[in-house]
Image (cartoon, rainbow, N blue to C red; front, top):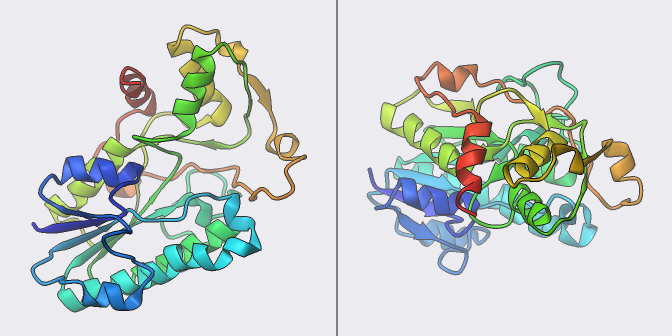
Amino acid sequence: MRAVIVGARGQLGRALQQEFPNAVALDRAELDLTDAAAVAGYDWSGVDVVLNAAAWTAVDAAEDPANHAAVRAVNVDAVAHLARAAQSAGATLVHVSSEYVFDGGHPGPIPEDLPPSPLSVYGQSKADGDREAVRAARHYLVRTTWVVGEGGNFVRTMASLADRGVSPTVVDDQVGRPTFTVDLAAGIAHLLRTGAPFGTYNLTNGGEPASWADVAAAVFTARGRPADDVGRTSTEAYFADKPGAAVRPLNSVLNLSKIEATGFAPRNWRTALAEYLATI
């Protein structure tokens, strides 16, 4: 299987390079995905799989009108360019999306076929990108949440605060599951290597859903700090003085039944968290 990873220097891109060590790894300097001519002109001959880990993920910055064109260029236009390239080459497109395409109001774990209802500019761009990705006949659209990997992320921030004796206040009414990039990459590899039916799959770590404050408390406990050193607040209160912030979905829990039915068993997020914290 000859694979090309785009967005290869981000958190997921780095994990995909570990999972697919023989893949061609490209960052923006090597292939500007927002340039239709550059994508069309790349030599895709012999490529079996295009793994798209590129995205604009700064959800609050996406709200700034000055950034709207750039957000759509990466999250929508680039996906369309890749879908056309994959279709022309007869390759499989793996595109990674987000629960931000939903409004968080669904009662219970969110299924793959729930109609999108984004609350933010970022969420709308990801929903529009999803529509472009599925134009490739051979595609896996992988929706995930709360990504943690090599680089800046929530878990690293909380570990740093714990180590420095700082006691943060964290929202406790947004509920989901962290997704560690090693597990996300492993799930993607499973879909490809088992020849799972093409389509949309939710893919996060498993285990009991938790709030951001619960995750922070687990980090603090692992670092030898009391869990109640993490203060708790509501999303409304936390963002009351941040008028430019994106609206967050409160329910980020994705239903994992479909990918589990393919034979992939996502690790419990608490197990993955303990392993991750041992490395930082």
